[in-house]
Length: 538
Image (cartoon, rainbow, N blue to C red; front, side, top):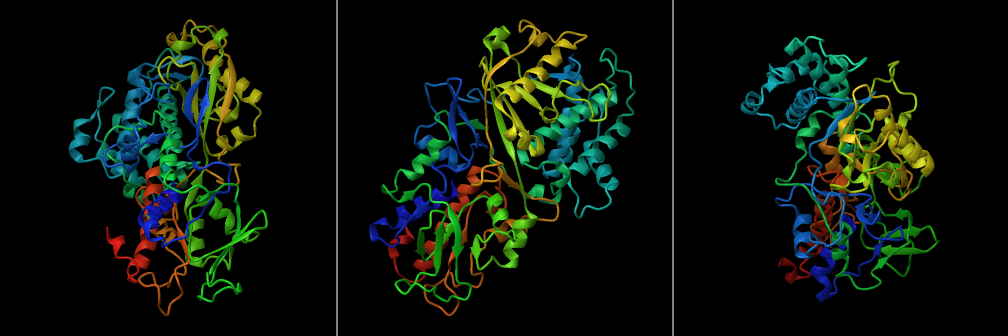
């Protein structure tokens, strides 16, 4: 998204004057990067980017409207929006009463809104009734902060756990729940809270919320309005951006091995060129350039600054490598499974939320594989679909990539089936499916093991801050003169774009889009101030 947005902007602004000789080099065999629309079970699905996160002011929504990508005769993932009315089932096959789930869900939602700076005192008062108790969420959040040793370096995971403890003290709740086997009220609430934390892991890509910085969360910005998927696929946005570029301008299968640049502005040894940047590719070919906009993922940059790698020659300066090291970059994978028609009434498979026992609990079902135990939900990709979807993050997401399809199908089937076969009180929502749920085929993303990505998206880790995202966006050389073509300082050479370079919209496609525009405009400004093209002003 970032690279093609930059190319689209540069080409559209300067094609008539032929100011730039542009080239987009892509290491893979397709365009789109972490946007990858595919097909499964006869439906259009997304292996990567899925949602337009708020339609109010989103450039992605605007493009989708302009190219009529929001309308389709085909069925597509989440075409009816977010799944509603989830059925929450605790390990052992206990379908939980909505009131049990709602009280903890409200607590979790309010605590996250507090972290994000969204929870006003009036809203906290309006939503103060929780499971029959009057709850002061601002007081709970304040108590949680007091329980933490320091707000500096505080992680979201620690804050949330302290908030749950403060909630228990606040409501003075008795442990009087009945009919849920070995589950006590407190254990159930803790497990429901953990379910929401596991969902948060997929939102943020943090393997553990204890690595997620508390103070930076309030800087993240969302667009208002509903969140929707793109009926013709997210790839349609990328293809639209690429469609204005001449044939041959995008070169696929050109994996960059090394980027050579000149920190002091000394031109490299190519006597036939004054261009200071040289790209060396895996196939042995080379390309020289005046400027390069690097839009690889933060995961690739992290691999590129390790001692054994020489992705940049000379190496990137410390301010850049330190920012790259401090920021977080996690793995999130999607798993699609086709329900076997022998499993009964597959069209009515519900939106299941899964509540698991603690790792040390003796009540744990031995048939459930460890990599399933932080999966928050299983749901059809739209109402009555025979394809179900689950999200995985962190260590479990990486494990998913290494498993054989048969192991995934078996593990998933045993997990879902265990929620039925062990049931004391039958799970109403699954009646008619039979006691064994079977899946016929599987499709999963593999962002972690793919060397072109090495993960999914960035987050602000403990020890880093929004300042590091700004440092990610700094061009090189740092003292380059970006206001004039001529000058005593070294010429602008390496520019950086991508979701991990946007301070308030990191981890999103629109953040990547904005970053691509930013760097294209940086180059246009670089030349405009030299008086080259007045037409660039419009």
